[in-house]
Length: 85
Image 1 (tube, helix red, strand yellow):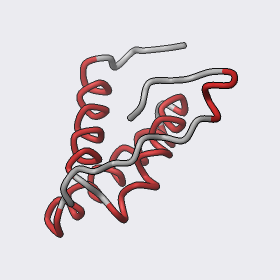
Image 2 (cartoon, helix red, strand yellow):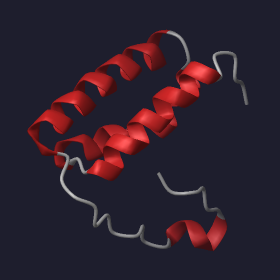
Image 3 (cartoon, one colour):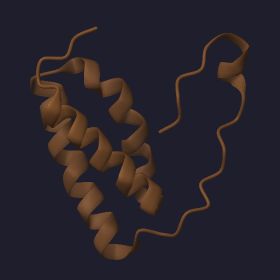
Image 4 (tube, one colour):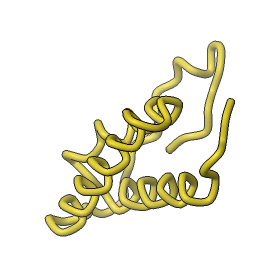
């Protein structure tokens, strides 16, 4: 995931992801995690959907960076169960 950018900087293209492919096992793992986080986001915490939508769109062509981003987000949800805006 990229740091948040605002105003004119938000229109800049994202850097390309040149990391290695996650492989079939990695893609299946990402899909499982995405389904789990989606269930949580829909039923418990709608705020997480904005971050999650970006990850969900990357799961079809997942790379090792995508897997690390999903695991990082899962760690965040685990360590901050009562986070609010």
